[in-house]
Length: 539
Image (cartoon, rainbow, N blue to C red; front, top):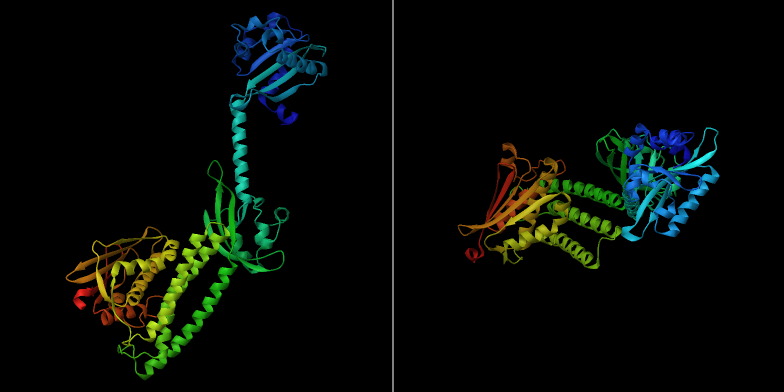
């Protein structure tokens, strides 16, 4: 605190304006007047006044109590040597007082420490020369108080800020704080790794961060830094690195409130998602290519023998591609999310060797499922595949493992209830394909229609020598028109759907397992029911 700032303090302004009234030209009766005595006795600080020889003239009641005196009058005529048992301390105080008296310059708010470790105390002291009416120094006014709690609080706050700085400096995200006036108040050092600009260059940059944003994305990106927008906002944008390279970023924003709850600025965090966007573009092009080939193959199959509509046991190449494309979308999406999570965890050093091995095994399993899909559909109606007895619960758990990353990302809670173990006869991969379709459709419905509390419940039971699998979710209801046609081929309610998923589920359950599949609306969503004969009955 500067001297001019100190002068603004009401207490120290009072010390300045009244110091020459404490003794300057006044007799003892004036100093001891009741209003003045009451005034200084009410102050929480210890106040003393001395003559030029270092003898105490008086003090307030707080100062007397601090020195162990019964009454303030007992201090009159005493020196620091009389009041302090430590001669070194008494000598130090006398020397410091002489400096102020001889120099004639006040000393304000000097912090000193007494003691060590946890028992240490801090004191704040101010000393003002007393002058007579002619300006001559005739004494010294001393004021001090115990500021230990304040010092400890400030130190705790400093350490807290230091820890926050350390954490911020190790961030991998490009984070920033822009105040309510649009000025950059803080940017993480990671900005240099992400965008190529140093923090100093960012602080000097006008209209930061728009100069880094791609010109075509500046319009919609500017809103993310608007303090008047929603409290939480997320978007994606392109930015141009200092080296001229174009990158993709995902930015999330939160409005920072002040102590009154009013917007005080915007905190934003950007991660580089260029690799993810490039992968998405490849998938989009692949999907476009597959959709064109599916359309061509489907038209060819429809003009020849209308194999799918007649539930024939012959499948043309066009149908194969259509089925593969539909079945591959879900594993491809799960694989993409799995790899993306591994990338993020690796970037943040949150993944160890064991976890990485587990993720890779999941990825290999997804690839194996995708590979087996080709063979399964090529031989879909071929009697070569062998039926085996397998556990329904194990099959369900295997599918849930495949969708674990996708369901977790969508914040969907999945519960499984299987009070009885049951075995069915058939091909486990085909049952897995059915369950994968049902759970993927449930996930899509929950994400599209339900903002929170998304739930999927799977119940496995034995009823009348049948294994019954009920998959219930609290997504949107199915209209009466759609529910009557939901298992028809090429009928879909999705903008980009092929209408083959549920049709193939029905074909697999009815034709390969000798069971049945149905769907009905519930109180809070939809329930699919699969009924498959138990293995012993098939045997």
